[in-house]
Image (cartoon, rainbow, N blue to C red; front, side, top):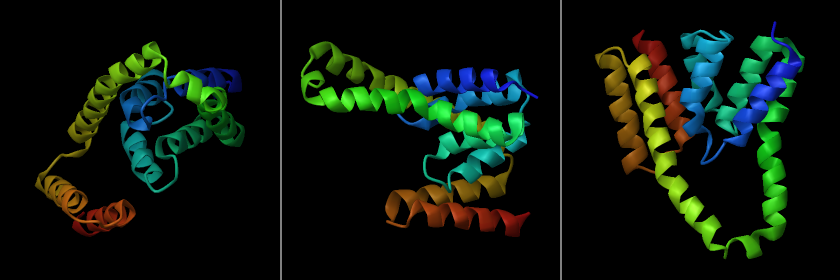
Length: 172
């Protein structure tokens, strides 16, 4: 069992780089949770990732799941609190000073520079997930249909995710 201090430190560090949404962290989370600490198998990681899409704050909820696997209820609590602690603190500081900060050139330029990196990290995460979960024709068909529904309709993502899960149940 992993110590609660170790969990707190790991999730605090992850929370510090929670820039641009959680999807940029998928490769890092996979490395830490599956490869480094062996808290989850790759299949459990992918299942946890899929299930976390049904909750608010999807990847942060993956932290709760992994924290539970690594340290029971206290581990889940610690992982959840510490993944949110840096961004909550940052938002409290930035929120009070937003009007002053938004006009500083270095901050604006830094944020402009982060955007392409975030897009690249999300693309890398999508590639890694696809490489490990798309193993046959059926999976590619579900992918293409899901993409088409997202791209060209206004159907709720929740409906598409649940529908894809049901299709997966039926075709396996």
